[in-house]
Length: 169
Image 1: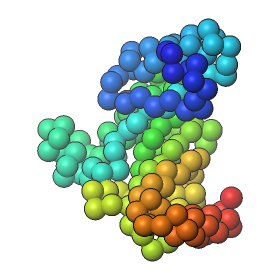
Image 2: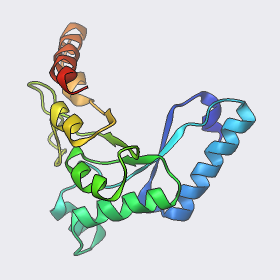
Image 3: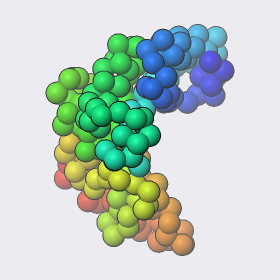
Image 4: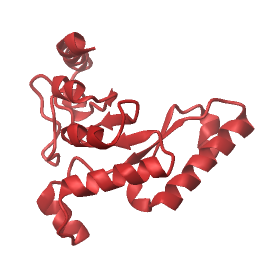
C-alpha cells in the first residue's frame, strides 16, 4: 500500500469487507512500509458506525441479529485477520473486552463535548470520560469541537474536554 509511505500511524478498513480483505490490507501496509523504509501503521477495522442503532442496522443489513452480535462478530473477524484493533462506539467497549484483551486497540468516534453534541446523525455516543472508563485507547472528537464558530471557542472546548478526562488518564 502506497499509503504507508506517507508516514500514517493508523490505517482503517471496513470489517464488513471480510477477513481476506483485512488480511490483504494488512499485507499491503507491511509491504508499503517495508518498501518505504518506514514504520508500519497500525491497521484497524471499522465495526458498526456510531450513526447506526439497532433499527437502522436491521433495515440496512436486513438482519435480525443484534447490533451487539455484529460488533462482536466484526471485532473477532478483525482479530482473525491480524488487525491491531477496531473502530467502534464507546458503548460497545464492555462487550468488546469480553472477547479481546486490553491491548486490542479501540478507537471510539461519537464523543460528545462538555456542552456540545456530536451531531443529530449520531446514535451511539458517549462522553469522553465514559469512553475512557470503558477502555477506549483513542477518542475521535469531531463536531463536538469543530462546530464552534471561532478558533478561540474551539480551543476552549478542547481544553475543557482535556481537563474532564485528566483524572482518567
